[in-house]
Amino acid sequence: MDRIKIAVDTLGGDNGCEFMMLGISEAMNKYDDIDIIVTGKEDEIRKYMSQYNCDEKRITVINATEEITCHDAPVEAIRKKKDSSLVLALNEVKNGNAKACISSGNSGAILAGGQFIVGRAKGVKRTPLAPLLPTKGEPSLLIDCGANVDAKPENLVQFAKMGSIYMENIEGVKNPRVGIVNIGAEDEKGNALVKETIPLLRECKDINFIGSVESREIPFGAADVLVCEAFTGNALLKLYEGMGSMFMSEIKGALMTNLKTKIGAALINKDLKKTLKKYKADDKGGAPLLGLKGLVVKIHGNSKNNEVSSAIAQCRTFIMNNVTDKIVSAFESGE
Image 1 (cartoon, rainbow, N blue to C red):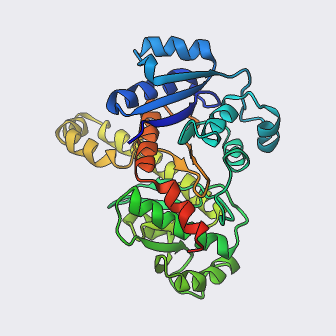
Image 2 (cartoon, rainbow, N blue to C red):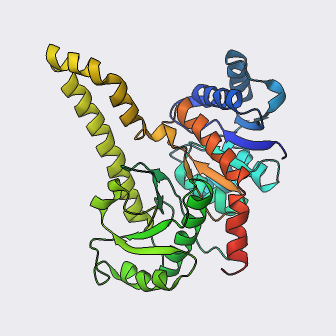
C-alpha cells in the first residue's frame, strides 16, 4: 500500500503549535507508514520538529502567512484568507497530495472549507459531523453533531447510511443498529422532522433501523448509530461532555475527602483508571465530516497531543479501509 499522507493544520486551536507537533511526533513514532504535511508558521513548526525529534524526511512543511481565528466569519475567511493554514491544508486534500486533513480551528470554517474546497461527493446533499460517544459498551456514532441545524428527512436518511458505513469499516460493527434520537420510543412521538424521517428510515434497506432512542438510553449503548439534526446533536454532545467532566471532578473530590477515602482510592486506583479511560474524549479521535470527496476531521479547539495523535490514527484507519471511497460509491450509485 502507498504511504498514508495526512495534512495537519497547526493554527487556530487554543494550545498552539507545540501540542500539535508533539501529537504528530507520537503518531509518527507509532506508525511508520504515515507521512505528515504540516501547515502553519514554519519557524514554530521546525522548532518543535527539532524539540520532539520528528523525522524530517516524513514531514512536509507549508508556511502559512494567514490564520483563521475563532472570531472570523467562516465563509468569508475561507474565501479571503487563501494563505491561511486551514485553507492550505484543505487544498492538499483537494489536490490529492493528502488523503485527510485534521484541524482544531474554527468549526464553521472547517465545515465551509470542507464543502467549498474538498467538495461534497456526488449525490450527497449534506455533510454531517460524526463524533464517537463513549457508552457502557462499545462507542456509538452521533451523526450530526453540528453541521446541519436545518436538516430535512432525506438528509437524516443519508446520515444513517454514512454512519452505518463508518461503523462497519472503522469500528468493525456488523449490521450496525441505527436509531433516531427522539423524546419517546413510539413512532408518533417527536417533532415534525422526526415523524417524517422515521418511515423513510424504516423503508431504507441499506440500514438496520431499530426505531427511536431516548437520550437516557444513549449512555447504555442503545444504538450504534444515533441519527439527528445538528441542533439536537450538538446539545446532546455538549451535555455529554459537561456531565463527563462533572462526574470526573466529583469522583476525584470524593476520593480525596479524608484519610479513609484516600486509602480506598489507592486500593482501587488501577481499576478505576482502567474504567474511566474509555470515557476520555482524547482517545476517540476527532469528528469526521462525512460525505466529502476526501477526509476532513475536526478535533476540539483545546486539543492536546493525545487527541492529535489519536485523530491521526483515526485517519489512518479510515484511509486503510477506504471509507471515503465506500461512501462516495454508495451515493454515486444511488444506493
